[in-house]
Structure formats: structure tokens, C-alpha cells
Image 1 (cartoon, rainbow, N blue to C red):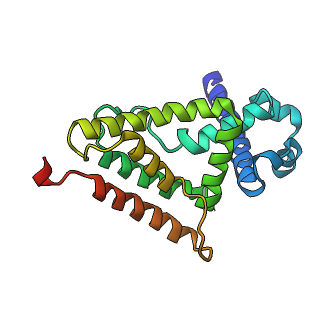
Image 2: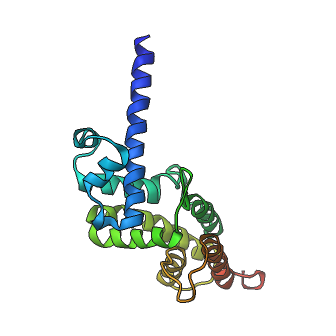
Image 3: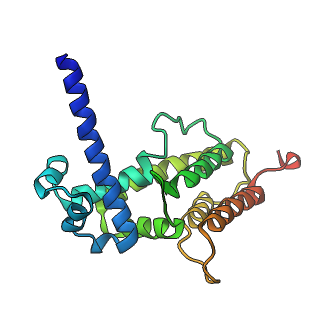
Length: 205
């Protein structure tokens, strides 16, 4: 009986924590990371400041945790062995992640706002930038191995990585603002076109 009580209590606490993270992230998407106040989060959820700080050390810890959750932890499997992953498989995983990123628990979000927030956080949070660098390191390993194994042509690893990041991290369109679905579709199409340009054909193997 006591075990059931502890389990139920832990579930409720986790649910509250997740709600705080989700609300914080959605507010940052809407207002910008530097415009979100702790009182905004409190008012949105109807919780006290004390309850919020029960889960997080402070505002910076909350923002970092929310960004890590919704930019990485929620969408990428930590058990993937990147040393054996092909670049094609890596891009396929990225495509699946994009489809999930545009819907956070039933709330549709703009992929451009999502990417813009990511870029902004990278510039102001050293802690988040360190996490991102670790993730970029996994991508660099995949690209390096793709060249070594002959999956793609012998081109600059930095060029391949920067181009893929520029496509996946697109933040704007110079033409009339298109729909979210269209932008996601174009991002996937463009990164696949780039892969087709650099992949090794049978004659080159």
C-alpha cells in the first residue's frame, strides 16, 4: 500500500515538473527567452513560486532544463550508437524528430520560431552550448565515418556539417510567410537533395 502511495505521489510530481517545463518552453517560443518572467509561468499554471523552485534551482536552471528537454532529450534516443550509424540513417532520424518537434503535447508550433529560439539560447547559455557541442560531436562522428566508409564523397567534414545544420536550423524565409507544414517539407526535401549531391555513386565506390 505504501509502495503504491509513493508511486502515485512520484507520478504527480513528475507531471507537475513536465507541465512547468512545457509551459516555460512554449512561453519562450511565443515571447522570446529573455522576455519570459517567472510570474508568467506562475500565472499560466496557477502555481506558487515556492512550488516552481521545488523542482528547479532558479530561472536559469528552469530555462536550461526546458531547452534541453525540448531540443534534445525528448526527440533523440540516448542509446543510439553513432559510431555505426550511416549519414542516411542520421538524416532519417532527424526527419522523424522534425515531425515531432512541431507538435508539443497537442500544441502546434512554428519550426522557424523553434529554430530561432535554439539559435538564441546557444548564444547566451554556455551550459546549453556545451550540451549542443556534445550533440554536434555525434553528428561530426557520423559525417567522418560516412566519408571514411565511402558513403559520401571526400569533401570537407566541416562543410557537410555546416550545410546540414544550416538546412535543419533554418530560421526564416525571404518570400511570403509559408505554412509550417510547407517549411518542414522543404527542410526535409532540401537536406535530402544535399545528401544526394554528396553521396557516392556506384561508379565512384
